[in-house]
Length: 310
Image 1 (spheres, rainbow, N blue to C red):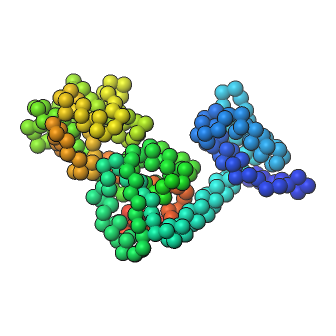
Image 2 (image 1 turned 180 degrees about the vertical axis):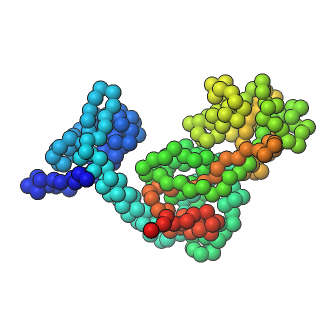
């Protein structure tokens, strides 16, 4: 097992951003991708990692023209850096929680259509436990919620689908909700109580832009129908999607948590059979363990179990 040591004569505190850039480069195996992830110039990221290597006293990466890989020292530092960053994130969460308790606010990102019914009971239970708690619901799309979480503008967000794993965002499934077909009222499919996916063969497929909601993007309906995502038309908003379907040229898939709260003239929703399809509804937050109010939210819905300490 390699240990990371620093010459005591040269030792000085490592900077938080250096560790963050180092972890990003290690996880991306690329300085360019790591810089894009951290929203800094590649030269800036490279300079900070070089400074970190000088402080450590040796190289952390094997560098080639195509990719970078960790040295033995880098592998040892990666373990400790993740622990350090997790502790810093947790400290930030605790500080935000104190502010929440003082201000009585939980900044919660919810789907663009509003609070899903699956969350109402849990929110009510949390309000009874924290009588002064005020929930600030911020409507939006999953991708934008993720950005707001990373920037500290939200404390938690309810999202559809499992987000891409990152070192700074955590996720817990809340429930699996039914996917329903969105079709024009004038369509022959509208006369059926249930629609088989095979009946969508040859129809024009539509989905939300993946940059808004990756889980509800073209891959969702193209995978379900066995077609290419490149053939799926995309909409830059939920309203644009419903408008296009109402015009009679497209069909789409949306979660029941959306269809149960949104009505649109010229559009109807139908269940999928047999067996149907589902998509995860979950909650995401920044850091490792959820902040106390978020943990309460998950606990009241029996959705979250603290990790085992065995």
